[in-house]
Image (cartoon, rainbow, N blue to C red):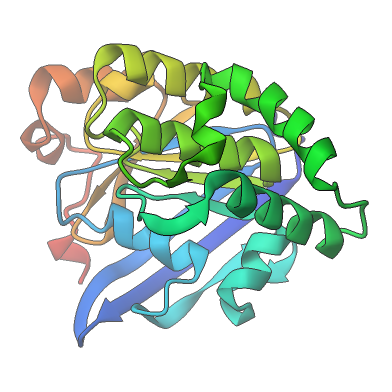
Length: 265
């Protein structure tokens, strides 16, 4: 929900970054306020997933210039685990499997670590079991998930639901969902999107990173940004996603209001 009086949660200014000496981000600017949902769209290789990983603190990427302020903190100075404890959450495009670690143990450790960092009470196994089962209902998840190893043998939809379950438990200030719709059939997409919508509120913000418009039929963004060649080249409302679906990404380059990324290098 757009409210210009809401406090700014994330402020990205002229962010540049590289990996293996190849510049990927070439001056990203973005402002996200509490209560907002932003969608970042773009072709493969445009830099949108790189941007998501940099916000979360992925060590494989080097920020070369620019700034990122998160809740009045310099995000770039914080280690990944501190970013997480302070409220940054990244749902992976390809969640990894952790054989031998029960989902219930993993989730309780993550939750209690988060609670401890906030000075709040931790839950014992029995208390957590009741709590997590409540959250699982948001995502229509079977309780059998708790006894299975983390993501091991999970379908694509099950992995994505498990990511959103983590979001429900951790209650981040900023949730970054990287290609959450990839590999999902229409029923799984509906369930995942419904869970995200139930978790969105005035005390958090969400960034959706996606290639396709279909996710935005279920999670309606306040702003849609188009990324190309490491820059956000156009920002508009939810109708922009529909236009991209109809006309494709080449259409955006013919928009006279859009200055090409190459011309600004």
